[in-house]
Image (tube, helix red, strand yellow):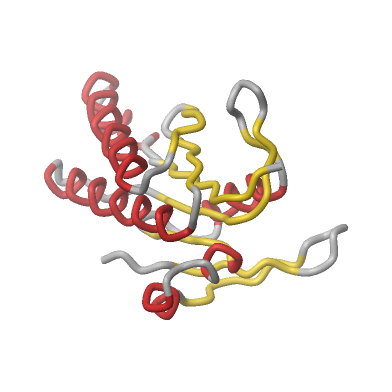
Amino acid sequence: MTEGVVLFADLQMDPLYDSLGEQAARALIGDALKILDEGIRAGAGRVVKKIGDQVMAVFPDAAEAAIAAIAMQRGVAALAHAKSRESRLRVGFAWGPFVEQADGDLFGDTVSHASSTLSRRRNGKIVLTGDAASRLPPAQRAKCSLIYTLELKGKGGSIEYFELPWE
């Protein structure tokens, strides 16, 4: 078992196909996915997998995941602004133990918690679990605000979700 940060980024680009058409939407999504890749590299992370317009990445620590998440939000916001579109990126991450399979895929509660961060806020936000927030540098941690606490069914305890500002 390995410990680290699991991050999910979801572009929420489905409405683009209706408004732009398939070819233009694919081009815009391709540009946005490149921005996500650049953000992951900026934070010294590694892409685990891509599923449509969603990316899963892993980082050695929360500070590097925060660097990546902020770079992703800023890059996609700039792209959306240049194309007169609303920024539709959700980014979330969690810190903790996970199992890495031989094919590089990740499994475990930390992966589930990271994935669940995407449903905790609207587009244009960065959400992280309390364990990840507690591992940020003090100045950055102080900027985080608690948005939600979730009771864990069948496992006891709870998980806190925080928002990390990036604008």
